Image 1: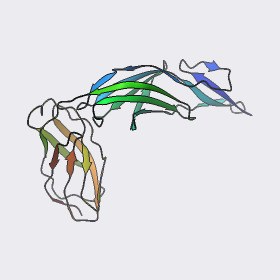
Image 2: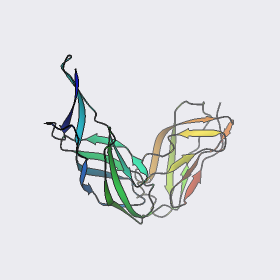
Image 3: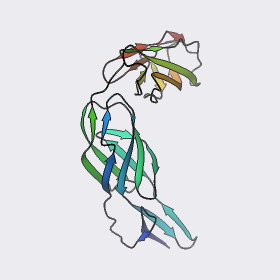
Image 4: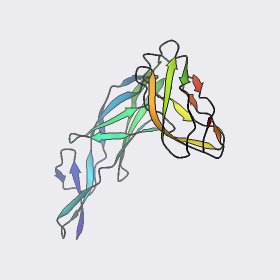
Length: 215
């Protein structure tokens, strides 16, 4: 026999078949710079659904929790027993006010209107990419990108990664730069043998790699 039960954020059973909607208590910090990837903590009241199998003596809790900032889905890195959702917001949002939305695995949602404000950032003037030698399709290699010009050494944001027509690169959004430098494993697939990697940020700054061979 199976019965739907719920488990609160403190891992206590709640005897209720109509599960309450989650509630966002706070978002910290409530403000971030557009040019800086920012760790975010969403403090929420979460009642998680669970399935109890009395025959097997087991409990399966649906711990799926997703977070959106505006239309941007951000990764759920951890959910504490107290209901604090840890995530990281990449530097992909233009200055403005954004709603923060939390969705549980069973579809229940909550929104904190204007929960995060993005303010103007300090961007580098462009990007340079260290020389890339011949690569094999779908085999990881190390990509090094350097911010250039004013504010370069302090840059801790993300950039988008692209190749030309007929090619793909993964991931499409970089990890955050560290003191103005990004060193990351990427994978390229292309029907073309000559490939160029193009990096851009949301403020319009960009950089191009050398043309390299993909076999």
